[in-house]
Image 1 (cartoon, helix red, strand yellow):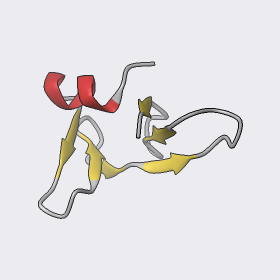
Image 2 (cartoon, helix red, strand yellow; image 1 turned 45 degrees about the horizontal axis):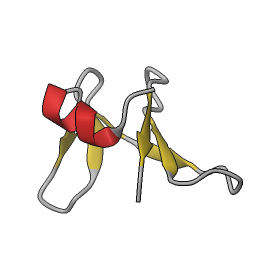
Image 3 (cartoon, helix red, strand yellow; image 1 turned 180 degrees about the horizontal axis):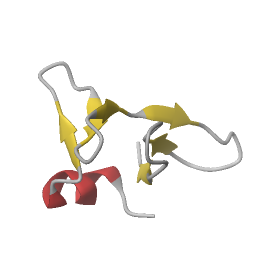
Image 4 (cartoon, one colour; image 1 turned 90 degrees about the vertical axis):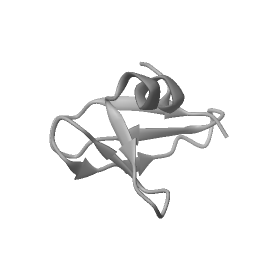
Length: 56
C-alpha cells in the first residue's frame, strides 16, 4: 500500500482546489477507512478498491 503523498506524485491520486482526493483511474472521490488501532487513515477508492495510507 503506497502513501497518498507518493500517489499524488505518481499521478494516481489528484487533489482538487478544496483538498478533496480522487482516484485518477476511476475519477471517484476517495472514502476513508479508519482503524482505531493504527496510526493514520486508509483512503479507499469505492470503484476500484485501491487503497492508500494517509499519514497525518
